[in-house]
Length: 98
Picture (cartoon, rainbow, N blue to C red):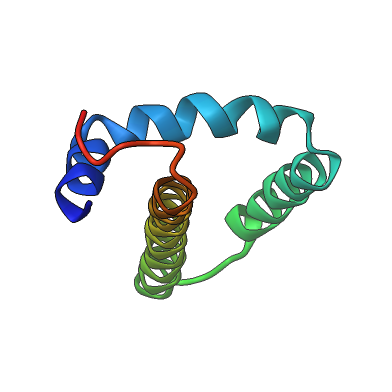
């Protein structure tokens, strides 16, 4: 079963995640409001009179938060797929080979 899961996970999972989640994000009001808030805060941040060295640290910190969060979300999604496969296998709804 683990081999089957690995095959599925290796089969362009990023494309699957994007295809499934992008339409949901476009329809989610809370997510859309967060994007508006983020744009507003970014505009305010860009107008701050901060030394370049300080802005670089803040920019790096924000980028690190963003990539960490994106990676964690990908892992959560893959874990959900794995759990679904195991559930359907135990229920006898899928076989162990492709």
